Amino acid sequence: MVNLQTQTLEGPDLKPVFDLQKLSSWAVVGIFVLLLVVALSLAQSLFVPLVSAVALAFMLGPWVTALRRWGIPPAAFAAVIVLGALVLIHAAIVQGSVVAVDWVGRAPELLESFSNKLSAAFGPAFSLERLENTFARTEGGPFDAGKLLQSTMNFLTPTIGELILFLAALFFSLSGRDGFRRYLVFVSEDKETRLRTLRMLNNIERDLKSYLAVVAAINFALATIVAVTAYAVGLPNPLLWGVFAFALEFIPYVGPVVIYGALFLVSLATFGTIAQALVAPGILLVADTMDAYVVTPNVIGRRMTLDPGVVFLALVFWTWLWGPVGALLATPLLIAGTVTFSHLFPQHKIQLPE
Image (cartoon, rainbow, N blue to C red):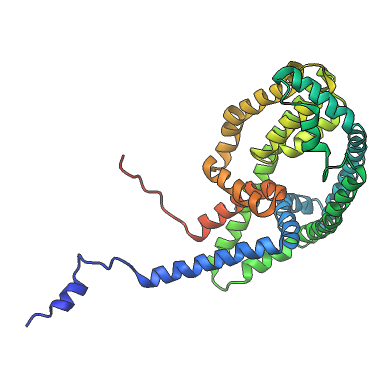
């Protein structure tokens, strides 16, 4: 007698529709990812400075190796980097506070100027009363500089603590780089796994270093264009505009939009017409367009392959999770994740039929 049930279950051409073991494994992975996202969100004040420091340490890691060959210890290089960061932060705070105080003091005058120019261009819908209700009134009262200062201090107090944690983590990440790499490599007893880990760490450092060098060079060129344009059209503080543009251009999509808006508002407050206010952001828009469609694809595309759609999704996710700092870290984290995944799960390229 033929066992039909056995033939049905063990037939060579019949497979179960659902593999419960794989399904349960993916469910466990999904639960772990959700819990990880929740942890990253709840402990944002801890993870943001630590992840930022580790990412920057990976970018600067090859410099540690190169300078050690010249007899410079990693701790000395780490100290120079931290001190340099402190100097830059101090200069940015001093210059930025001077400009901010000036603009806060001129807020009513600037609002009236904006209202007159926008009303002349677009009609009475852009009136001073509407602008004041939108920007300058709090709880039905007039503009309150003291409350703005209090809100600023409430924001800066935890930020200073995170900055100290970032600088400390950066110093220890750079000075202890060799020991950390040695631990990750020798944590496994398998020789093949050790070699794979070493190659993965080297590739992450190489790709992040290339990303930092190329993007910094491109951003420096764009910042120079912004500074020269600001000087040529007569905007105040052209050098500060260049530094501002250099920093924000590291944030894909979001950074340039912020620069366009800031250039337009300051130009609108400085010049008499909207046409003149559009000159500086228009020049930067042309430069950004050339960079996005000509420079970046030809330079970065040859060094690393990143799908623009994946970059956009990473930007949306990390910005939603960690705000502006997440937007800044989105591309480096995507590069590190892509390299790690390619080493842990190597795949052979197969030519698919068209």
